[in-house]
Picture 1 (cartoon, one colour):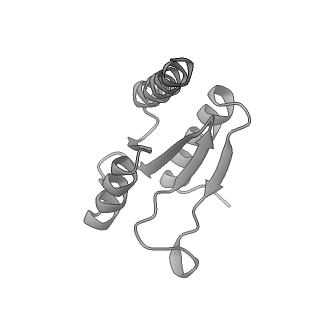
Picture 2 (cartoon, rainbow, N blue to C red; picture 1 turned 135 degrees about the vertical axis):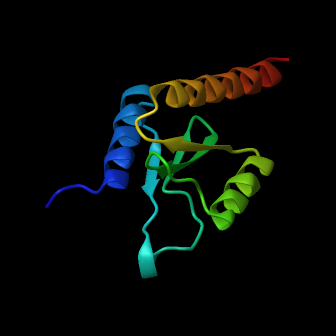
Length: 111
């Protein structure tokens, strides 16, 4: 069975995260009747940082409910992102944001 365009974006995200966030806890949120409406497609926990990623194909954008969930996660201290297509630059920016968060938390602990 061929992958849908969004499934290809999710596979791209999964590969990047596996290569760059070794041993991260990962939860691929189920869609349809088994999921919770608005939950981001990919949820990760790595070194104490919660990461939520909404995957979209080129030309699509999150629904208002998805934006609401992403904003809620960010307000609670998580890192939330929308990745459209196979956007390597966006994933590198996400990695940079997570690394800064970890470095800032380490500095707070060491004070």
